[in-house]
Length: 138
Image 1 (tube, rainbow, N blue to C red):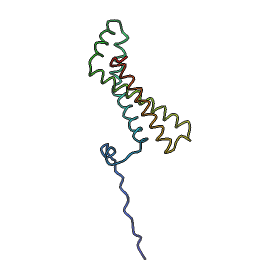
Image 2: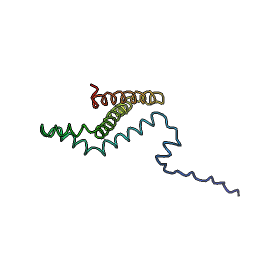
Image 3: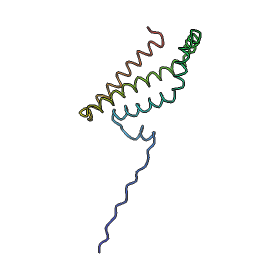
Image 4: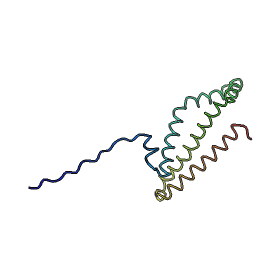
């Protein structure tokens, strides 16, 4: 009898973030999906900071003045700007995902790319508008 030639079983390994960012060429929809997770993680980690800022702004007039003084620091402004980007991007990408869940015709490679571009453009415009307001342009 002839013995069956066994093919070696494929090995599946977990890949790290370094391999994802350097070795793989993700489509734009994949990058938006990863950024959606990163922005959600940032919002979750900085939730105590955001709640502290909200509490300080609403307690009294004196605490509001302290809040304004705290927010005048450039480092705090940059942190708030990053968190604003995280919120705006996460919101826009979440609307994209909800739209794709409700309309299965929107789930295609072409529509995924076009909606990813829309998410990036809209969240960038909103973040720039927030940055201009935060740094006193208007």
